[in-house]
Length: 304
Image (tube, rainbow, N blue to C red; front, side):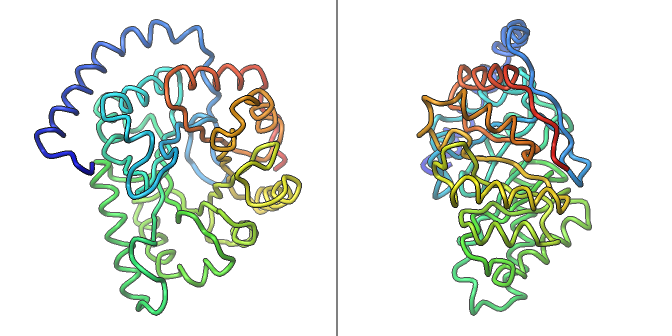
């Protein structure tokens, strides 16, 4: 919400609400020509959601992204379009600044009908060492409370530690993990996990008993991934064998594989190791394109 004063914020949200009122009837009327994605239950959890999610972090950083830079009216309408098509998985992050946009979308989308995943960008808090563990734990605790306030929800389906880049992450971020575990015990979070941007970090996540959900970069050509495709697939297989949920990201290589979407979706669907995928569609047409491709290539049975 950088640069957006209170008057501008109210005007933007009012505009989004007015747009949605006129948009919903026409979107639902045309929804039958695009197949809805299948509903899945994440392994090891009671979370039910669509097999594909709407990502909100294209070129994300400093609490903004290409999605949030679209403005309230367009991004909220995009979330509504996805929901009208059957997309009930929303992929957010503090780093993207997308919480308040989701909160606005939840004015018309029933909270209990969608699964929300967000991510804690612990780097905002400074170096992990030599900060006192009690201080880091308190920061994580209050951050979860802030997330729930920003989203206007009693619980968040999934909270991930954002962007693990070292195999030492379970040691360095132990106070954060403890605080998130406490929030899970209280019912404020349903599932915990990590998004990885390093191959060794992902190997650790595959074996960590703390991890319920691994968010991993995967596509058939190794674009924007953490290692060769075969190596990453091997780790994902181990993750599934350990009973964890795997959500695939960078399915289109952050846009670098835009000319190979057919191949990318077929690969993701036939892999048998992805509980769900998240795709950062920027307009309704891109959402519909992915849904059509998913229907073209039905998902293979999960290996576990």
